[in-house]
Length: 546
Image (cartoon, rainbow, N blue to C red; front, side, top):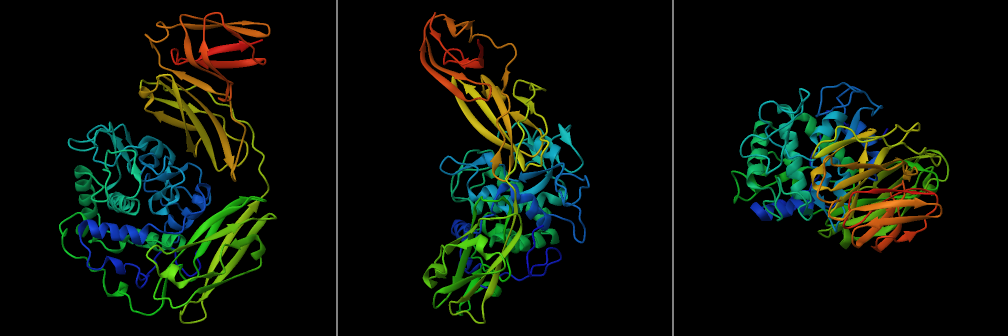
């Protein structure tokens, strides 16, 4: 389990670090939002998605209890088991992109919007926006509701997700954080968002979130969680620290200069804002021989000379840092500085090290930052079996597969979609051995296969399952395609010339491309079963090679 030395995880009474919000002083509206972005966007990145349940043990448990604090259901589950829970992005990860990537932006593992969630509730929530549901919701477990939105909400989405009243403010402040910290991202979904630095939220969603923020004020749970996350990531949710900050950016105080308070005013003395004394940088579980690198964020004010770093501890040989000295001008700069820390275990077991940070004109003998990691043997993973899709409707279906006999971090589902003869592919990380896939109505046909993941390793791909719309017509009839099988060869029979042919094996890999296929054309394939699609015939056709 992770630990944050010097930080009490619950019931914490902590002051905002001196100077942390100093650049917000006197700012208004859009300028204030950008200043907040500049403060909270640079931060230490959580090392991996698979390590999140370990972090949740510190951020999301009831005080003096081993029970998970799940804001999505009232099912009692207990640490350390994560069974039945998912790693839930409060703001769906499909909503943002950076250079075409979703998974590898810092938002993907940002604890400020990641929570443990009841699996069925998470699946029902899908990527729907927040909102107020109308009567007869399609999902209601007493805490979470998913249903048709009331008039004026949803932004065009078919359904919305409504949390319990006691958590509505939590989710509002989470969304305020996300649209501010990551206002530089390209939004791929506009149900609640618009592409600009301010206001970023559109009118209906801004009114909704401000209402929730006012009705459900900051709780002690949020304050405690904010401190623990700060100990991991070196950034905070300012909308928890300052209840009225949202009013200065979007609400009743737009145009008035914001004053963060005397506790955050710069004092002129050398100050290291982050990292904090005795913070922990945890690498989670890693396979022996693998390397995992994390970025430790440094930000200070008025440092007069370089910071010195000394690596020590029993297992220091398994950790490496990119610098032993960091210039004062880098740490004092508006962007701060990232130190690379790499963990490369050479044997199994728990490993600990630390760095002493000193000099820079700072008073005292320095502060420690602790490194932790746990190493396991290279995993052996069994090949899974994918089952036929169930609950198939016009716009969704349920994919299922066998459970792994080994301990795994998650399942990786690869979804292949044929749209107008072109195949696109996306990967989805699943905590359970099933997933409900929506937006099926946008595809001509689909297929999926699955793998298990453990410590960065993947099992061999399962068999591929093909999913088609029932009653489809008007495609095959225009340009039919069939395949005849003979010993050593297969022959195509088709009406007209087909283009863009792709032959897939049962793992979903492309084994042959055929730019043009004419009636009677023959090719050779190794013994086995394959599928072929063309631009003119997107429905997969089975090939049996003898």
